[in-house]
Length: 304
Image 1 (cartoon, rainbow, N blue to C red):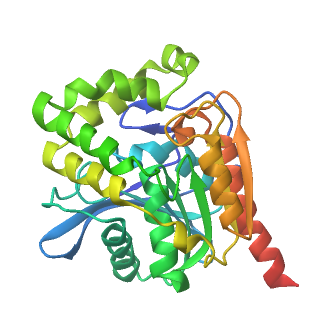
Image 2: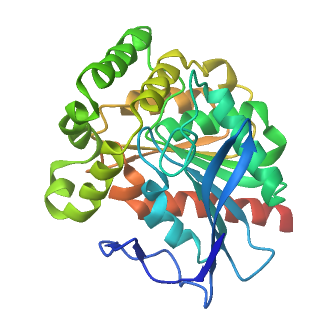
């Protein structure tokens, strides 16, 4: 376990300077990095930014396919002004265990519930980007008492009738040709041309993470997403929900976000201009603002 006191706006040398945070950073945030065992010999690599106020709301941020918790770094920095924030690498990703597949979003959701127990957390707002949104939806369905609010970013409950075949094709390409064969496809899928041109360090960090993937874990996660169909859960979600999507996201386009909005009764939908598939990196401010708005609304309800 490592601890540090950190209010700088960097992640392992990568600066975030394009947008201003939504509030002032607290005087002292304690950052705790740990490997948390979750059973079956698997552990997850976690970062908790502990707000100095013990009553501060708790937030969990879940990353996208083949990347790691860096996806949420800019948002986590902004949220640390008001919240205690957990980011982590899902199983098979980043610095976490590369356990053997097959995987399921339900398994990933249960992994998060195990993290809650390990941290002593009773409830939190949960946000997920892309794959992380699917995990967050599954978590809402399987562990509703642990969820206070939900934010879904650049994601979907279902990739469509041809999803198993399309995701199988991507898994096979990685297995047969190597993960590097997918890099250019991913870069253009993640970010707009403008961001690619102006944020080279952030893009390079994502590419390095992508290239470092365990191919077996990557392929298992692709097949997990191909099999995912969480549409039956949408009508059961009762917590306030914010849905955001990049206007130029063609991985999970605005129509998919619209289907989430229709299916989840207590939800809002925001389409972010000049954004593609990783809004937490490309446009962290509206994402952070959506999460804090949900939490403030809940606090207002509780105080009346």
